[in-house]
Image 1 (cartoon, rainbow, N blue to C red):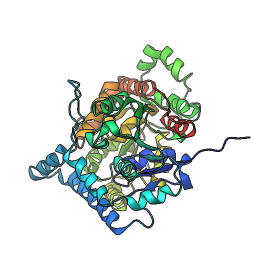
Image 2: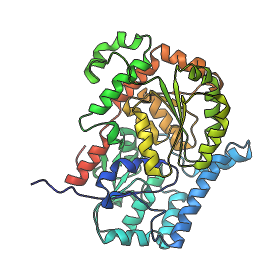
Image 3: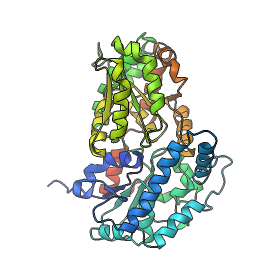
Image 4: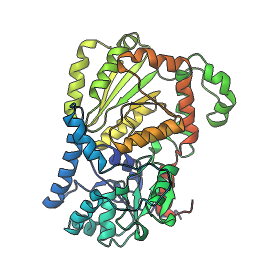
Length: 430
């Protein structure tokens, strides 16, 4: 008799795409078959909705406003100060709480989140939250089930951990060793931390990594046009990927991902202008991912209308987050180069996709960038006006193929499966 699959409340917030994208691969174990957005669910009380709306509006406003010289940058730096991640060295006790964290608990003490946790408590299966606030709400309000919190960055701010971290009952699921070790510095007990890897989409992996290996083979052909990397590292490729196909199943493809606040749209247009002759000549395909923002889709549609790029320039979007993630993940299977700010998409380097790192926004993304460079899966974007030059230098030198293999080998790819195992069988030891 087949064992019944255990379920969990999978919780995110629709503030940008990061927390929703992290939750999306876990939908198979979500109670009711869907992810719950803590800031936007049926029946949410008006006071709770207002609390979340103000938080989201402030973040998106500051992310866009920072581009205004002096005033915008000053305001952003002040905002970023309250979520700043301190340097890792020297290793020391970093458990002292922050003003921002105290503010979150102030609102929880005033009743924010009570309705949500009461709804969950009617079926007290484990909670898996991809944002710290719902996890705090569950812990503070006495949720009767186990509470897990998935970290979605390569390093983590103090605000992700309880006011009294040594007493926390939250179990943290860490995507990498940097996050695991940082949580310990904040005072989280080691038994409350499990190194799982980031939850990458199963449709891009396969249960035995059969999908990712197949896609990787085609990708390496496009990323190593001169055969330089293959010549030097043929045994490594054979060990991890297998025999490469004779021909790729897609043209050289770049995917430029724009974050929820839309702050990178001008950079994307500069890169398109630089690459337009190669796109016209069908030497590469370019995808602009704009998420669920219809105004952003229309913006790009109007800007590229006169370029006459014959369908080799595609605008990727979705009416809902679910539709967008489905389309995005499908597009990744034939994507060779990912251009993105160093967000949660940094972990998608584990799919064997080299990352061109767009300018970061805030302290967390600065650390994500450092981690990408540390692993060797990403390189900082050069001047976008000259993309046609520097990008093809990287390509012809085999550098992008090397980055792809670095990510494929070094970054944990089975995070989704590891988290599912924890829900089925309980916490595991690292």
